Image 1 (tube, rainbow, N blue to C red):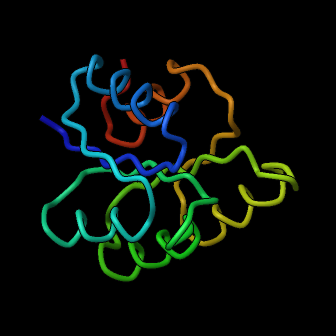
Image 2: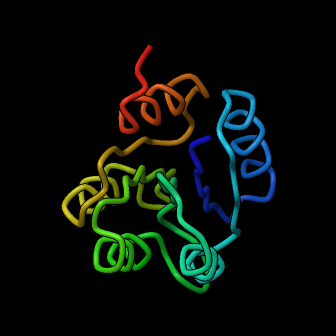
Length: 124
């Protein structure tokens, strides 16, 4: 079973993302910030990471850089509502840093699942 790590500081959105991805047949771990997510990455292997870009303690951009340096083959989906500025500012920068896919919040669960399947080579 493919393992996915989802990082988002939104305490209402995170459980919904986890549930949706689990229901699609993936094993999921979650973290409320990049620092927590980095600890999980260092402890166990994941096939893909979904990370919010604006989080406390360690933001998504730092997390993407860390993943690309330490786990270069790992697939990354960056998600963002963009805070006060808007996602159009952050998402292109995340793509430049190495995110394989970027999604602006809010997005339908099926859009996220489609991106996950595509990156893992499991398109239906």
